[in-house]
Image 1 (tube, one colour):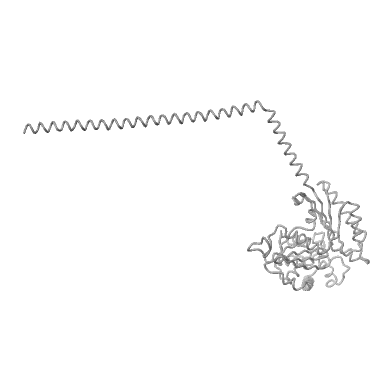
Image 2: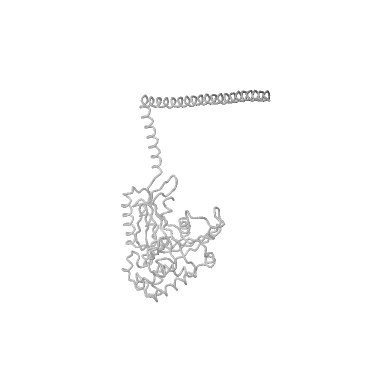
Length: 411
């Protein structure tokens, strides 16, 4: 029994020694790996540190080079600035050569409209309208009182005074070229051509009489410039208007142009601001020699509306049928831009109810109550457009503040 116990003790001692040796070996291996990791980490830190030092050295070198260049080559920097300034001045000079302040005159039957615009003649673009003034000159009325269908010396003197004033105003803007066109009243005057030639020679302006067809074409272009094309034409979108209608009412003529799928339809009429006023004087007031139909009673206004509707019925049926409810209708010219917008206090569109309200407010108005240079035609303008809108089934007209002068700047 003692020999067995002794043997067991010896066996346990040997096993303990072996385990201790194995544990020592494992500990040594772990220590070796830890040491290797520490060495590797130290090497990596030194590598990163050296890389950072090299980067800083390069930055310092670049700063030094820049400093040296700045110190050594100031004359080169000055020369570079001179070159840059010269290029800038040459560019400005080229741009200025393309810029010109131009004048334009639209000599209408009841008013002469003038404008000055800053124009880029190289790009054929109006940059800014810098001056605008209208002169009330009643050419149509003067012609209607003439026995030989000629303008009187007094009315031509009014035009000369307007041109003098316009040119004086233009001095402040260094106005260059002036172009002018005359419309309906001049188309019917026997002395129009000679009168415009004399005025052109005296005041150094280019002035021509344009046909009603040309007036309609130009009116349509300026009315829809920058607006979306109609359905069925290049560039039209899915929600494009079915048709576009330009409605131009001046002192002596009316133009309606409708575009539908690229096809144009025109109405060229003689009923306009002055001629409708004269019709009211003759048919309702019973005296065509009067200068103004004011004041007008409510009954007289109703009779005048019916008169306008009867005149609207004279427009050819094919034209009336082309006016659709979803058409885009744009009004241009003095009647829409000045008379209607001014009296209705609207900004860029007039509806039938706006015109009705304005007419009712002006029942029994005398000329002085209108506080306008065009008092004799202001109320009859409302009546004329209102009657036509009813008969043509037009509920609203967008108004674009343009006239023939806007075309002349680039012509």
